[in-house]
Image (tube, rainbow, N blue to C red; front, side, top):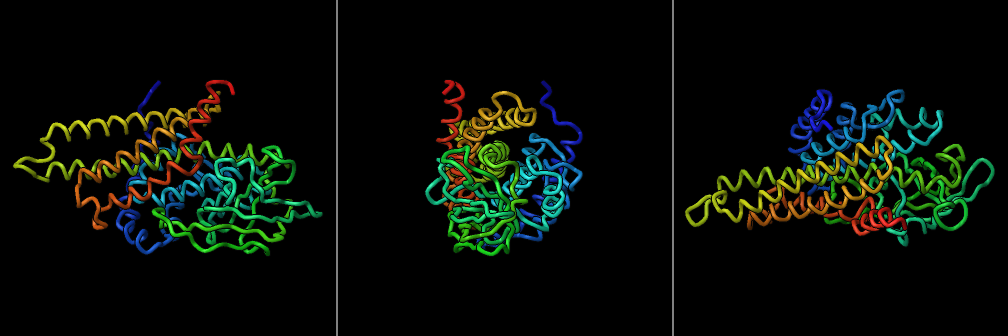
Length: 379
């Protein structure tokens, strides 16, 4: 049980940290305010290997582990939490093709995903099926060498901008066993998009409904067999939850570091804020919660990578704990800045808006509790 990072892990941690500070952090405010999807920056990240972090190297991936990915995403999130989260979603979609696709699909789709010449979206949620994902209604009907898709996906990161949409659709009976996974390429007749959503945060990534109206997709674009889709989707979410948890830790660490600097400089009642014991206790609790969250995420990442029994439960535990702690820490860092924290001139309010959604997506934190309790109780 060695908690020290290896030399290789320290090296790509430093690479991610440098990239976050140099190429993301200076632009994060403009990306947020102007709702810019930073394509060039994303492709620069891909040149460092961040477009296919845990995709195999024969198609251009970095072939790293889930643990390695959490280290990278924690650093990237300090540069721009919203943009790091999109990179996480892109990686999740790419991994699903890598892990469950056949040789031809891997060679066709993945090289351009790993360079981020193409962007990918993950399409599970629908207007009437969020937490109850197995009730999805988007249907794919076999017609010779094609499927004909009809339905709508909601809250899709990259919607309207991505090149590939990894979609969970119903090809069979009600419930999880009737769901299949199909890749829909942008430009396919019958594929269209809703208006861009106006969101509280995550403004550096487009979000829109993805709509199918007699959209004909080749059977060759089906990932796995008919009926495999729900299992593929849930496997992808294990990793996605770890990455989003790491993004929450990175965002919280960013805010905590700036709060420490502020408390050392800011004076009230003739003392630095750092000299008030009550405030020091709050900072001590935040640092402790961050360290606990980091350890939980890395433990769960190791379990998922090694396919240990209980890996899904550990990922759910880590996601729930880290995203709840991350938001509470960022919120209190804003409080400790007083009125200054509420201003857009300071970055904490932006991080607050970005990390809030982490408690909702990749499975709400209420659903994380369901996953954990069912596993423990054998339900």
